[in-house]
Length: 76
Image (cartoon, rainbow, N blue to C red; front, side, top):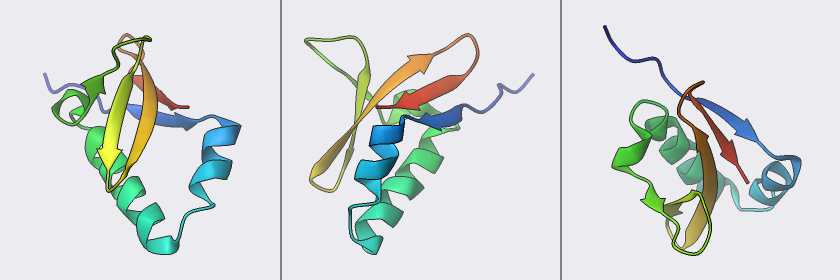
């Protein structure tokens, strides 16, 4: 049985921050997040000091909390 894809949920502040970037950077971040929906742990690195993960895109880091049971990752 194939595993279900993860869903993305953006915190209001994260969405506001994302919209501040130039179009090309926003697209790169968005495309990488879409890739993560299938197999997030291929791209994500655990954070050291706090619970959660980071996704590196260009010179930026996206901070992500994951709920494995309901297949959601929150973009903080």
